[in-house]
Length: 147
Image (cartoon, rainbow, N blue to C red; front, side, top):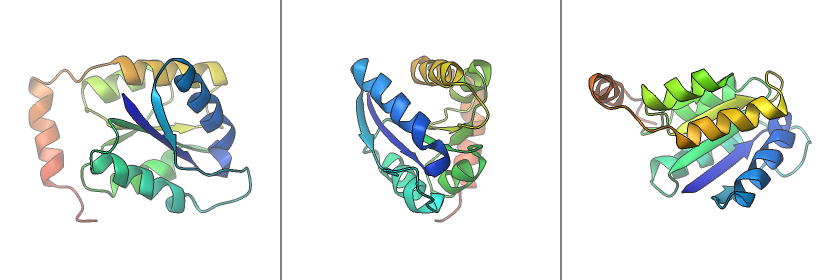
């Protein structure tokens, strides 16, 4: 599975932690930055990662910030992206199973390292249920922004 990962300064530490853990597990991970804990405007690093997922260059995306909310908002402005802000393993499982989220958004200030790694594991290893949820995904796709 090809994964893109990106963060602003507030998610920098967890981005590196998650990137390294996934590489150790054999995932193909590309890091879109940021490359330091210095302040950066999150749209500058998050939008290119989301666009790469939308183009099909990556199977999934993981984006991080302080809360993950702003990052998800940016990502969800990109046609073809369904970013879910997750704060525990159940929100990650449902984001994949019911919403077919192709981007996971995490808040470094809201979860522990252990929780973040567990959330990522569930996100990457949960399949979309399809069925009754497929109709809803199709409705979401019809109402996507034109960005």
